[in-house]
Image 1 (spheres, rainbow over the protein chains, first blue to last red):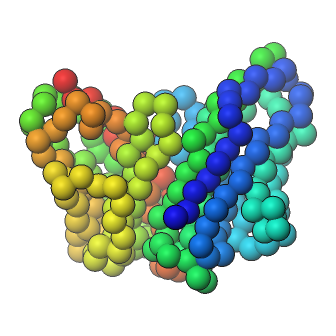
Image 2 (tube, rainbow over the protein chains, first blue to last red):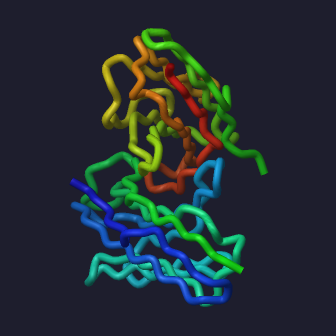
Length: 117
Length: 114
């Protein structure tokens, strides 16, 4: 079945540091890939997405590139801020060609990011 | 822009009681998904509906049922509640482009079973 594996956390950084959160996936078809962010006490917000190989999703300084050859979708940001402190979830939807789902999202275990001033 | 609305936001129930969670999708969205997120866990897919018909089913207990109504809102009914049902329940909706459309999440309903 489909699965998503994120780097083990939590991650603690100083403000303006470089961020990488690793994400790899297993899917039967050609999935779409997402990063969602969850701030304390809130719901999930879509951060960025990519729907085909070599696509780069970007938003608010965050970037991730869909790498089919390595089945990865690592999240990066060049300079983190205190306000980026949250839980980050990598997810896939295997609703595309060859996929087996009707759009349900499969999530990774989440990575807690804490940024200190 | 309008977002997904969930009600209630918080719910406290006793064991063996029933609960009904409601979800109002973004206008013109025809697909609704339900997810359960336990403490410190990733969200787990429960069930989805497309055009008022069940489209997919995940790890939803037999004690739970759900449906989507003619106005596209959805309700998740939970009976014989157990302590382990305490979790954050998310609803997400997506547009008319089919299952490949991006899902937008509501703020969640936090259920506590005592």
